Length: 174
Image 1 (cartoon, rainbow, N blue to C red):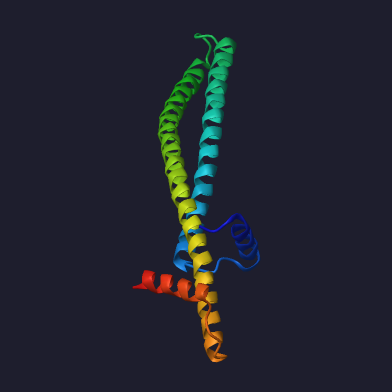
Image 2 (cartoon, rainbow, N blue to C red):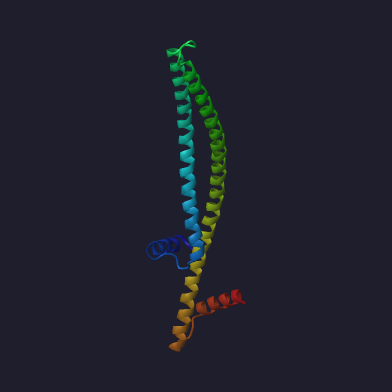
């Protein structure tokens, strides 16, 4: 495992240059997931606002009907209009109740989606840590092979440590 110093230098290098290994398709899917997560958060906020505002509209409708009833009695020539307004408000209230039920169901789904995103993020974090370990050891191997090539060009004998490292790498690759 890479030590703290190596991890820190790798983080700094990646901050400036990006990761050594790149998976364009995976990164594209990650961006799609982030935008979907933002859209779900926006949807959740809108649903909460809708629920709050629909309760307010329902209360306004009741208030309007109450005022109309207090202004016009049953024997007034405008009582038919007042009853029509009352019936319309009842219909509107039913529509809002149905919409609220649908919105509540959708809100429940957004909570489920958020939980799925949290588990996906945990898996992605694990993948990222493994990618960093891979990059670390890939860079070490590249340096080891480069040093071997340079030493062979200069006809310099390899040290015991270098031979041991190369044997371990060859053992892993076989």
